[in-house]
Image (cartoon, rainbow, N blue to C red; front, side):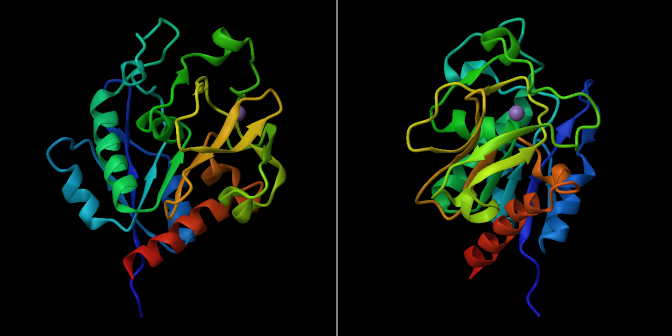
Length: 238
Ligand code: MN
């Protein structure tokens, strides 16, 4: 019997940064997909590399934070949300090593935004302010899908969930502005917002702006994003 591939999941913190936090749906989605979840605290720059040696795959989770605008050459405006620099430092270190070394990685919401920024892209600091679009912060409950995206045919995302319309949840106030060089857009909302990105040539480097781990309750094919990550992690370990 082969052991489950070890899938790291980055942790969030509460507002006071006293407690680590993570929605159970991430852990449950990795378990259901056949992975062994390993939760990763804020350890950069000392131990991020050590964590990566434990992992066969990585989930960069979302949370109540924004990617520091300094990382894409902007000053934080008042509309920017709270930053958790020690979290982002850890995730960036893990992500850069995963991209360089071929470790499978799934970026969810803020994790997708970090994937774009890590490769040289930028973000809208506040979608309602910058673009006058309001539909991307749905009211509770957050797991119920609230808008469609169009999945681009021929992408890895399309191979996982099918091309064309996909119903997604939406709990983000930021979004990709300029797409990083080398990344391909795999999904867009009807208003043009980028909802999915991926890195061709890497075994599995995908980002989605929605939360597949909670939307899968209502739209089961969202689980394919986690199944694909675990399959790639198994391949990676061979
Ligand atoms: Mn959205």
